Amino acid sequence: MATIDTVKEVLQENLDIDPETVQPESTLESLGIDSLDMVELICELEERCDIEFGEPEGIDTIGALVDYIESL
Amino acid sequence: MQDEMPKPEGSGAARRRREDLDELLSSTFNTVLRVEERALQNKITDGLTITEMHTIAAVGLYERNPMNVVAARLDVTLATLTTAVAKLERKGFVERSRSEEDRRKVLISLTKAGRAAYRSHRLFHRTMVESALEGLTEEEEQVLARSLNKVKRFFDEQAGERQADS
Image (cartoon, rainbow over all chains, first blue to last red; front, side, top):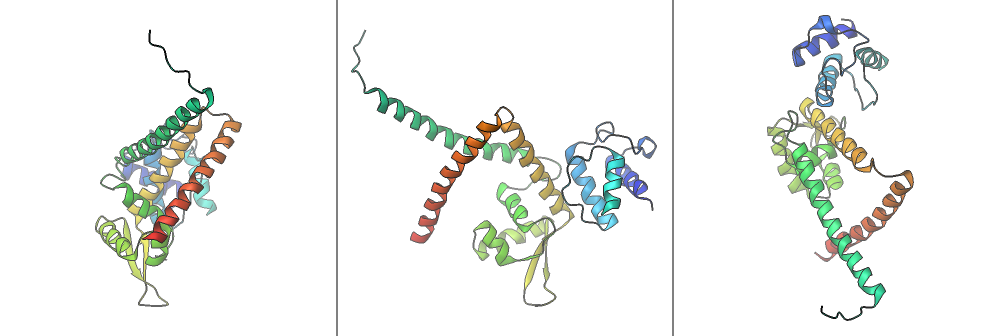
């Protein structure tokens, strides 16, 4: 599954965010994702994608999140 | 009006300053604890105590450590840590496993919920420090860090001596 689709799936399951509204350029803020939501999201993505996300700073869009995951 | 005894200028002011600092130190310490306690009341860390949160932090985000390593980080006995870990395991934040090299050795690591708690705690600390220091110039920040370091060194020594006594 493409990373962005995994992200969309996790967003829908965890935060009830409509996948249609999730675009690479969407900011986390515009989707109503706060820093605690992000913590949960990261832990979920770590498990699904079998990655160690670490503690990066400055990820503020879906595109940046996807790029970062793919760089791991 | 009552005549006051003229006080030697320097010593009175110095004493008041010391009293203010004493008060400032204890009240800052208490407030930080209170704020930290309140910060635990979120969807990720609700139900955890500060001590439990700090145990989670000492386990490490991706580490798998023997009990004695974590006990040393927290400066607690193995018995204390064993009790704490058993509780955290029941709450689902840590898990115990056996080392592949040495089956007698128990290793502890964080579960997914534990990693979420670890991260939210880090987030809290980062945000707290950033907001607290916001009003300071870079120079003030450096002076504060240097001064606090000196004060901390004193308390560390006291704590060390206290432990050696007992």
